[in-house]
Length: 94
Length: 94
Image 1 (tube, rainbow over the protein chains, first blue to last red):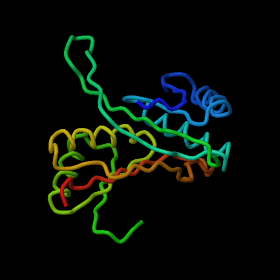
Image 2: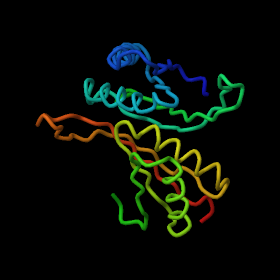
Image 3: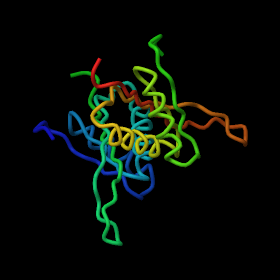
Image 4: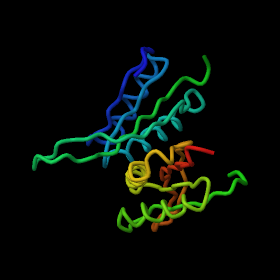
């Protein structure tokens, strides 16, 4: 992770619009933010980004998207790989 | 879409490993392939890519990821926006 000023919104099981609102508030303060999700929440993260972009158009854009895996220890004590996504949003101008 | 030689794997409701196998076979023939998914299948697309990369490491890499929305007409006749993802995989060398 770089030292740039940015905040991270972790996507979980709350209602979609909760994350949309959080992301838009963060974008009003920060020059860029990171939307992170893993596993089943990855689709929701993409939904959040698309709604944020549509609601604020053309103020913000996707700067970068990264996908990866994390190794988690599941309840039965075994390692399980889970996919992750990180989407960076930034202000279109400046 | 560009005119480069590439094939597309659409991620749907089949078992995960079906898509992994299809993608690896395509990558053996094509210099690059596109993994596409929308809505609930977006997380599966990321899983497929992560497994393909792990199984074939270090032969292939993610070249590009794009997210977008498509407007679909749902069964009640209204338009519904659905998120999409397109992940381009390419050979690491050449």
